[in-house]
Length: 524
Image (cartoon, rainbow, N blue to C red; front, side):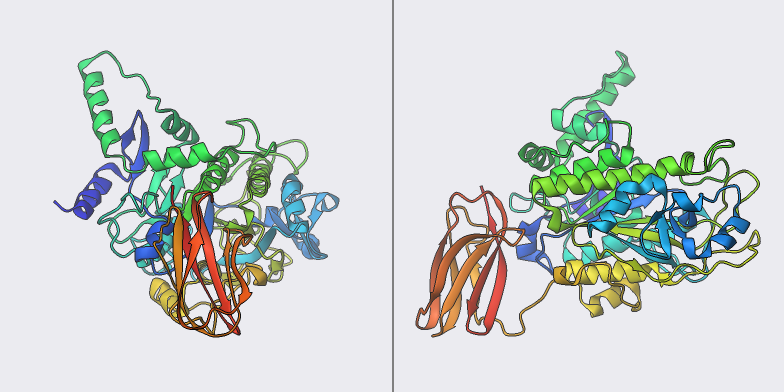
């Protein structure tokens, strides 16, 4: 049986989860920048973090249209926040007071909001709506692949054949949480490695196992764990990456107090440790608040939804602080989504029912710190069936991130989503990837990966040449040629990489008005 067929079969049999050392972990992913140099469509060191808010987030209680407070108070007098407690983002728009850290990120240029995100003809079933958001389909068609999975499959079309290898050891995606996200489901197998919980992750690092009962069934379970552990593909690379970096932010809550922060803490450690995984999926559940969204007595600024929003904001804030301290903040962009919003009008149980559009958050040092789109227009007297209408199709956000962050072409985006969608500027313009319109002829680097020395090859036209090596944040680590002429014709310039920390670097050559760059991987 071919490995692809085997993985496809085992995926179906285990619903994407196997037992490794006593805990659930699915092993379906691969690929780093090393592989990108040989078989990926685009070379990139960028990372996307997707935060799934499970249950349907009440967007009107998270991002508040303060310019329409009269209508808001009529629609939900039992839920609405006191207007003087709302934290301002803009003159017309505020944020829940439990999200004070998110407001500060907005002020610091690290968080943006997209208003009224949804899709035509919304579905109000948790299961179907989640399928739509994770697949990127229209509401009237069913796709079994995830939007991130299709992107990764296009970048690595031979996956999983031949992966992992010594040159390509890393998972392509990592999904953390009790539910394996369909976001990174590929055409045949899931493109990601699934870690069932943060406890599972730390057991993976320590090699610990849960005890088995001293019975015949226990012996069988121990044997199954051993077999699965032997076939687990990414344990070593995960352990190696985690060993290279330690979380530095003091802002993370104690373990177990904020499950999202616990997950993001793992992401920060793995990114800083050099794991070249492109997509991480995290999750925060509990948003299906049909009742007791706020307490029966006391302030509407507290309660179940306020607690969740606080965990969301504080988790993102600690994550951003950690990325900054670890020096990788400019490589990571994040976004939230929920399967739907809630109705405009509150119900009789101090809660809200399934609705349509809602705002989402984009976060990171390269996030565009704006509130994109006007506040939703609320009716003066909302009925029980009134919904927040869609302003921005959720696929506009997906395609804009893929285009700007991962350099996916418009033609490829049309193939991935079946049509084009309007552009949404969720990433800062100075962070957008650019390709030289006037490249240096014949530019290449070998060997790549390199251990001690690489050679840069290009065709010189006899003008002054600058050849530099930059790290993943664009900082110069080596200036090989500084403005001297090398003569006409083919050039072979040695570049010493001995002593550089293993990882991905950018080799940049400029001559006159021409410039080109390539990723140069320094191996151990």
